[in-house]
Length: 222
Image (cartoon, rainbow, N blue to C red; front, side):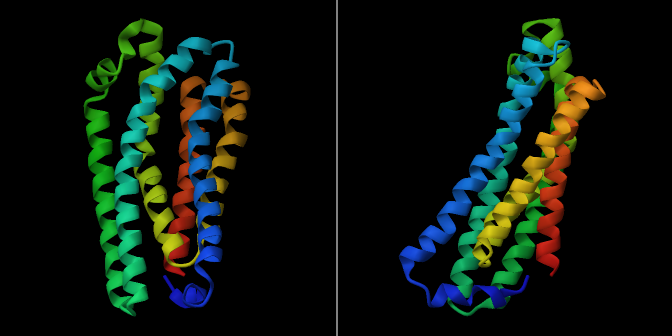
């Protein structure tokens, strides 16, 4: 990560900086919420999924929020430290904290993915997935593929605030937006054309998350 682009943080008025950062940040959060909304819309309009598919999606949603909360904790914590370090001229400390955040995020996401895969049925049962057999079947299918995407989802979401702290709020927003657009495009293809059902909705979501994570890696490496 190169800090050459963040010198404006030292010279521009606070009000202008707040607007420059707040708007992309809010948009990024709204776009991140689109994943579940878009899945719900397309699932509801698939005649072979319908309300059972929506119920299954709702069962899994809190588990994606749990993963997101861990990612945001890591990302926002590192973001604050990076901002403080750069402001104090300690670029080495900022670089080390980013490396630590990446390692922590990867390890936490892999552990969480393993727990989700190993304890799939008990977890889904706890969140009401066994309300009926059809909902449980759809929930298991959706949850399996979403679990495989947890490392990518957590990495992309954790790096988003870190990239903002480096002075690139627009890139952070664009990476999240690109992932959401991929999900919007692939959802109808996988659900209506290929008729992959809940797997299609989940794979479209994971594809978007992979793109966001890949863009984050590209940014950190340039």
